[in-house]
Image (cartoon, rainbow, N blue to C red):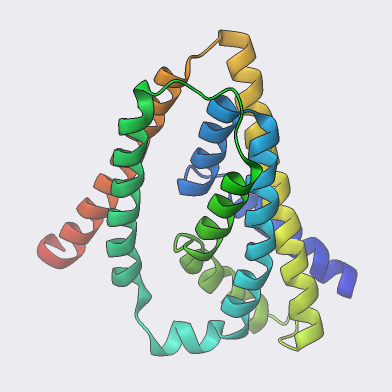
Length: 206
């Protein structure tokens, strides 16, 4: 049973990080501008925080989904987060890559984004409610701990896949950091605009 719980955590969080978002786009950016090693430092730090993040959300998933209306709050947060990331990335597009980067910077960046990761909250509220209501996992500490460890592993594997794909694309097409940063900045702005449109539609059109 615990093996199934671990397996579910791995698979479900791998799926959760497939759609474009601030985390996997950041991994792509770090891989191309700083190298695969720095991306791995980021991924390991982020995945460690993801274990505790998943445990916290899953532990209180039923209370969160019933007592707090998080949709609007998360949309507003995502507007600002994607906007800020877009501005930072856009400004750094002309900066020349350094010859060497500190692994502390990549680890610190991974820890920060691991804590500030609102995109995963709606996903886990939906998935967590389904898993618990259908008794696929138990809400005891041991079961949730195993599930959360699987979640961290799943996040790490998915992000590692993005890092390797980014490395392959860079080697195949010889992309410059300017092109990559510009493209990712545009994607961040587009995601921010999507959440703005979503808020406008829900509150003023629907």
